[in-house]
Length: 527
Image 1: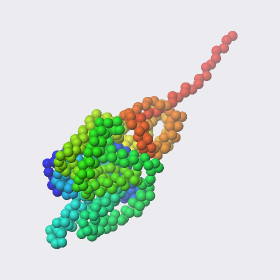
Image 2 (image 1 turned 60 degrees about the vertical axis):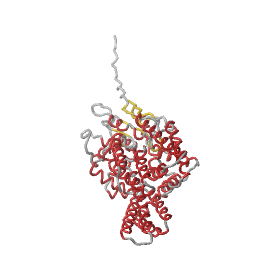
Image 3 (image 1 turned 30 degrees about the vertical axis):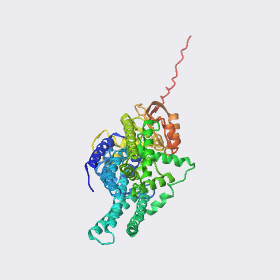
Image 4 (image 1 turned 120 degrees about the vertical axis):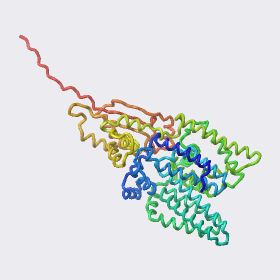
């Protein structure tokens, strides 16, 4: 595997952006929620995942636990492992593209994977996305190398080629096991690569059967947890339109990440031209129909059929998708088809330029999770005695913002102790019933509520707390931060979530003024 100048340049650009962005953009809900597992000791961490507290196997969680035990939990250190995994994946993408297609396609693949908006954002998230992305790249590379070894060996037994074949088989098995233990979509990905391997040559069926059997045997201990998750996660749509919505959201994430809202017409017009031109090119040459296309199409269809794909999960097959696109665009054409190819490349460049314009302006993003002003809200109210929130990012930032240590390494135990001071509504009610609303000196108790876009089921406790606040306190101040013009559309597309017109609403409550005690005036007498 070689790193040429193109690959090195892309790696440096991607790394520089991610290191900056990881510290600049908000740690969003899934990252903060999973951190509650990352900070746990290994045994209860794995036990919780076994019982389905999150719908994932344990590999990334264990790696992240070990990582933050050393570097701490502030945003850049928390996301550092994912950045490393993503950057390591780029030369693998380059080699896999060359192995399946040719050197030109490999160069196109590393550029398309390394500089597209979705990868540059979700690639640094403190979740399993980059690990599975790396596993997919290694699976595709090793599968192609095994096929090359068998094809070059022919009927003869050449020791050097046989040794190389065994090495790549071992790499494929390890990547397959890692993919299965990273996310359950990894099981489908391993199966798709295995099926593609079976179709390449009849001589390879025994090889792939052995590899698949080893992967299944190693994943066997976790199969009960996987089967339990199957009974909970996949489901059928109530309306056929839900499948179209799921497919459209996945397609939008593949093309633009979160940097183009529906009204970013200049992006979507260019992307429409790109899609039409690329499909036309694909129909004229079937060279692109290799293992990457199998993975991309198979995971996309399976995820859409089960409604399991959301924008963040698209990174499970996006590397395979862009490798396929690279194979289509890298093929030299003649005559009119060369102009079609130029149109496809140019429209993609225009579309991504529009995305990066939106990025620079911080406007017309399809998801505002990266811009949520939760850190600012927490910083302003860090001294309030009672803070109530259900969004896990509020708890995360409160744990990180320690007046005694604003910067530097934040150890797990210190963060965990501070994060406990953020209450959910039920905990807040219990707390408020046990403390006086005014101190002995008459100082009023301040209650700060921070509400955000959230899962609807997580907000079930708010009505009871609101009733208590109306009865015992008065609203002192309200701040509405970051308007979301697409909130109503998001509610229609994803009714399981609450999308308020403002991303963060901060309310400060204080006890009602005490009524003065009545005084008895002595009446005057005459005569």
